[in-house]
Length: 75
Image (tube, rainbow, N blue to C red; front, side, top):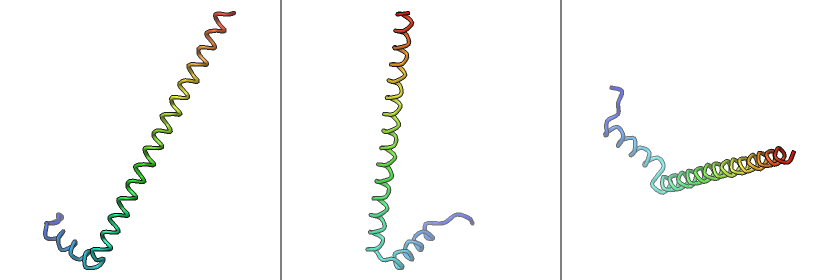
């Protein structure tokens, strides 16, 4: 009783096509695809930025540790 059958979905699809038309639905699909692509690109850029920051932090930590060891060996 709570599940939709295939006929319910077909009727809903026909109503949506009748309301918006195929051209408008095509534009909505294109805009949605562009938005998803932009979102993925932004997420990927943020992940790359975090990886670079972590790599720089790791390098700085290694440099500090090396300098501290040099001080110990000198003094």
